[in-house]
Length: 208
Image (cartoon, rainbow, N blue to C red; front, top):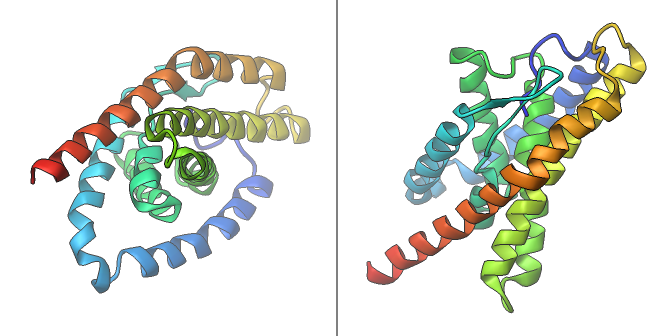
């Protein structure tokens, strides 16, 4: 679901950077400072898993792609702000070394995949974790991926509305091409992966 460089005009990418930049600074200072050194190995490992998951991309019509994200798991374990910073790092590395996404659209991709989706997943999990933690994790991860995908589709639709020459694919086409695989396949796999990973980590803590 990465938006590549060139798909969005500065009228959209610059405001996205303006929103993302202070969140990057805040998240880094709050969760990645000297006082958080004990948590960094676990966060680094989960970020690496997210990086691997997102390198397996399935092309979609309109120039985007669908894939697992893994940031919802980070949000459930460490909070949405940690997930945002970690996912932003993943997107930056993918843009620099694999040509996935891009630098001009980093703010947009980070907000969609690293903040909106993981925040929704975290909120859903918090609401359900006491009564049904597995269901909360499944529903949260599924919902999070759908909202991330929808956010990307909406921003592409906005770009088409503002300047069809910049992004010629009509919004209904982009929406269907992105949401149908996400709803039917990718979201379910993301949710199952999140539940499975949480159980494995919980067993590791209990045996440790």
